[in-house]
Length: 173
Image 1 (cartoon, rainbow, N blue to C red):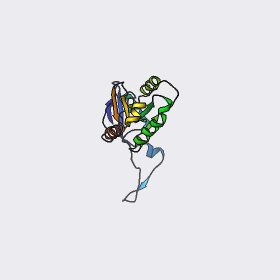
Image 2: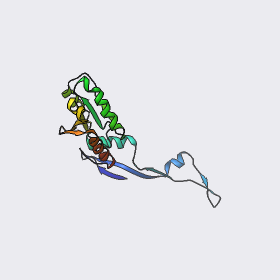
Image 3: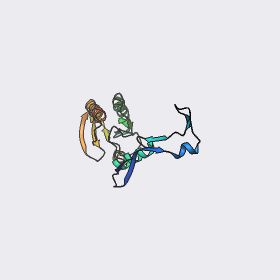
Image 4: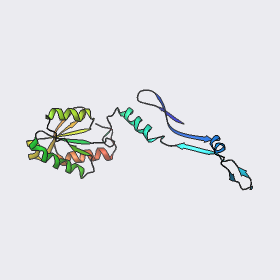
């Protein structure tokens, strides 16, 4: 077994390799050996990453849901300030999706601050806020999930930043 300690300090087994002498007898398994006699085999079980469910649970626990960009189900969300900015928000999302980024647009009829708060609660790594000035400049105000505001940046620069972060498997923001 390969054991390690979780983020909360609990011991956990991640990888296992076991030799089983009992199951072959229980299932009456046999093979004919080179000597022509019947022999009972030995079963070797292995779990390189254990079960998928355990691995996902460990990742959730380790990152406390704040997955790095490359692992986050939704990598960025575009938040229009008002209804008239939804079309530009969709355009920004489309530009990011060209780079195979997982992006949503929050077009709900809610206040912008409520949308930003929802994005933080959902632990989405990046929120791109768009309004009149951003649309005119082909930009978006970029916010990290922790609340840090990086200001307005050109959408092409944001796309490059996120693509690089994803492809290098960086552990920020």
